[in-house]
Length: 295
Ligand code: G1P
Figure 1 (cartoon, rainbow, N blue to C red):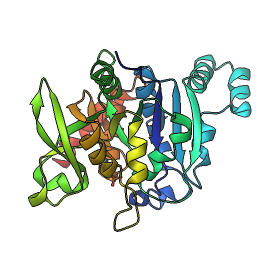
Figure 2: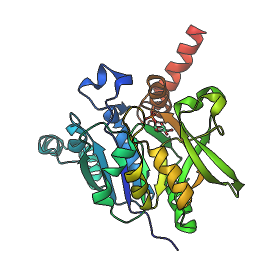
Figure 3: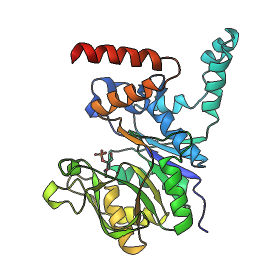
């Protein structure tokens, strides 16, 4: 039996250029889906997988992320005095969800560099990585994507990452795996190519931003040479890991939204809006009416 996954790393240092000007002062990870920041949903996904320590790797101009998981005396005091108990309880719940540990990535060195920045906190334990702008929403009664990967790791002892099938035209947006075949829903990864051209892609199995790694990944990331734009790619570290220690990939439960993309963010807002207890019914009626008007 392998070690339990108790730590997760959430890289959230990107500048969010796809969302400028909004991201000039507000981190995209804190954009709301109705009334909950994207990052909260990601932290909750990790917590539902049994994770206790969450390392958020952010950069300059993103201190609002740390503040979100901290106490706000003014807000809490106001809610208390106004008798808004359930809202206050929700704020207190969020603060105690997990130990949130904040790390600064001092330069934009790529996703691999961001994960490596968490090494002093993670140490030699296996850990999960959840990208801060990728949303995987699972139903209440199904495991989260991270929980599924954690259980796979715990039973196999092999680092395991999530994959999803994408159309050929989209392979150049993702890390794509090459594999040696599938057994019981698990692919044995031989290498990972970052954003290949469609004609060079080894498969259509893309990484949607959920990973569980043995701590050996740090050694591999530390020895990866920065690519053409000076960045350390997580996928290069994964290829090295796959060749030395082994790497599995598996499909994960949940609807996936690229919440760092304008269209993906709108889709997530609508779908989660439809499920929201306060506004869901109203939004459904509105969308039906809108659809009949715009045809
Ligand atoms: C990153 C990773 C890529 C992964 C993708 C998922 O790319 O480098 O391997 O498939 O996230 O969103 P980015 O979207 O940051 O360019």
